Image (tube, rainbow, N blue to C red; front, side, top):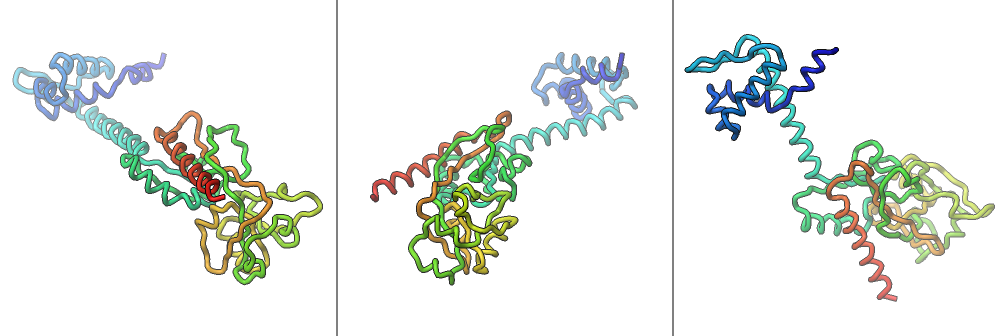
Length: 300
């Protein structure tokens, strides 16, 4: 039998807290007051600690309490363990006090600012952080965020998720491109151009076009690379309207893309480790997308 493992299994933080309190306060009575427990409870915990460790940790007299040589060593380790436990609790509490929402390209597009404003008003106790991660899951799989905004085609099976809305597609062009003077572009016209595609995190695939009427392709590595290639004029890009709202750049013009299926926008999170504010974030995102749809419908 592993006696060390058996002893450590019975060791509890309350035993160590009592030891530290008795030595710091100088008596069982004062330690009990400091801990908010009875003097009998302090005595029981100290006796239990000595039984678990197999050594005496305190010299007790009618006038004073002092650590034994073994008690001095135990106390030093106890303070480290108690400090670590306090740090663990503080870090866990801070984690729930912040909500990290990751995204690969854009957060909520034109709704991003309003999402932040409403969140701050309704949930001031939970700090919101929107962070871009160049990963298919927006940093969720890597443990870098609590929720992720997902637009790219992705297997949602391993995750919990909610559809919050849809976004229309636009075409991104160099500002001196002849198409930039037009009000809109048809999706079938893209087949006559070279299309910039980010295979890792982008939303555009060749499935938008039927064979053989598909554009030639130039692959990019991330949103910045994608924008740079388009600005040269040798490529165009197809993207959700959220990109146009979040990445207004000199040399880049966005125009509506006609006849293209809209892009579904999901919020995704870990099934077994959902942040307490997850459902509030999902509800707010759905509200914003629904409000936009109602405005569009009423304007027709």
